[in-house]
Image (cartoon, rainbow, N blue to C red; front, side, top):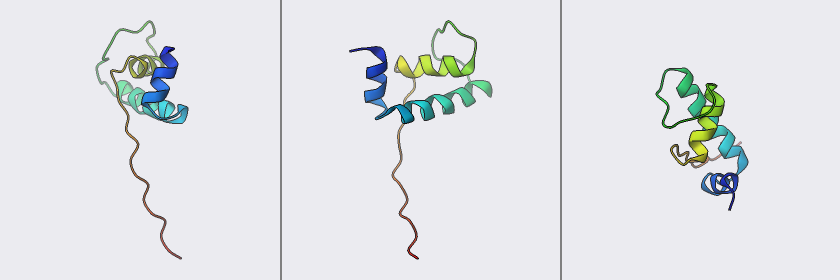
Amino acid sequence: MALNEQASLLLQNKYSLVKGAARRARQLQSGAPSLGVSNSLKACRVAQDEVRAGKVTYTVGARKPAPAL
């Protein structure tokens, strides 16, 4: 199984992967320390590498019910 497939299974779908990596990239840009070694200095790429390595997890919360009209 490819590394991308493993990350996709852990995070339910590609959209969740993107959302999780984006949130982690914002944390890195705000000064959070890196959780692993990456070949890039860009926060977005570092975040993607961390998510794929399993060092960052992302959970999807339950949806709020829509208000009745």
